[in-house]
Image (cartoon, rainbow, N blue to C red; front, side, top):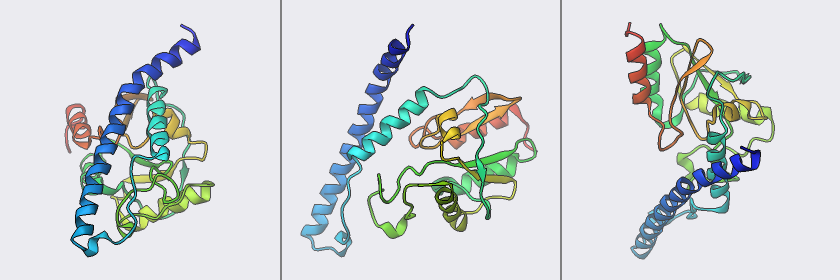
Length: 222
């Protein structure tokens, strides 16, 4: 099968799930807009601040790119990605802090944990997350390696992990992101230089409980 045929096949496979994601964001925007209008009519102070949509041209490009990364990822072996270390305390990914930290503490005797901070999914000057900006990190698009490490440092200053987990930043060529099809988040277990487990693509299919089950099945808890 030629390269063009492969690309066409991948595109056809991506289109349905891409449109379903766009539909979800459209519904999300509709609900938030309705809530915003209701609060506005009631003259609530909660309406202060600019309302931002999730379904934007920038967002659609990011979603499409994430599915392309997933489609072209390497899964037969552990790709030779070379992320760069960042100075600072160990840290974790936002909403999964506690469960991930517990996972590290329970299985660090049988597994080495590494957290790679990749290209920012929701930069403030790009596909920004709607809502109160004070509740989110104000991270701009990474222009160079220093920007990426500085953004990782922002996470390190707010979230902490057990010392058994190392934290590094992906290089500006996004080699780790491309090799493992990460965008936007993903768990990968490498065993004997082979990918033994590849979790679903985040945020919808990012499942730490599934990772726990795999570890419990393959390694007795100590």
